[in-house]
Length: 281
Image (cartoon, rainbow, N blue to C red; front, side, top):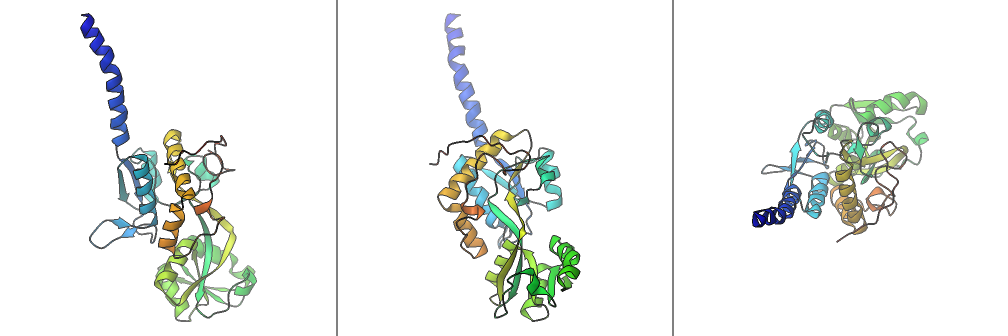
């Protein structure tokens, strides 16, 4: 009887250790919008490629976890996260006050902002006053279309809408429009594929964090993922992936190179200001 009790006592820590090991080996479940190049888009031969795929594959590797990355419509990603289908979202999600009230976010790994792209050789845009009398091409129904429609009269420009962002880019390259307005990463990526397009003026007031969202009850995993992202910023991995996919070397004060204090996005709901030390391996 005593030997049986001793065996149980000995087996208990082994079982606990085994459970922890099994949990550590469970795949991280996440998803992206698989049509949002260069963040995530189909690759020849099947599968998905892009900045966010590379970024979170590396995060999982450093956590010692496998990862499964689904490709789905962006509109369904946050509901699926809240339903427990995913542990977090690898898709770039703009952190807003409304979203931060319902989700936990890591700090931003990229800044998103509205940016103009112009034809090579055109006069650069130094301020919004420089687009007066010009035609601006946008993707119909996008946030950039909404901004253009709301501000066309104020700044004195005309709006040309197109079914896709590539069509808006071609309008600029062909001379039908002076500039296209889109997200900074998509404009920069388009420029790497279209030599006649040049990334130009950024509307800094539109700048926000792109970060990874988690459910409110999963602060532990949020903090672990953020710590890995911070180490990847410190060793240059995030900046290198940014340059690979977007074509430009990030500035020292860009989000790719900035380790923010605490956990989350400073100044927004869900932010935890508690300091923490990095243990980068």
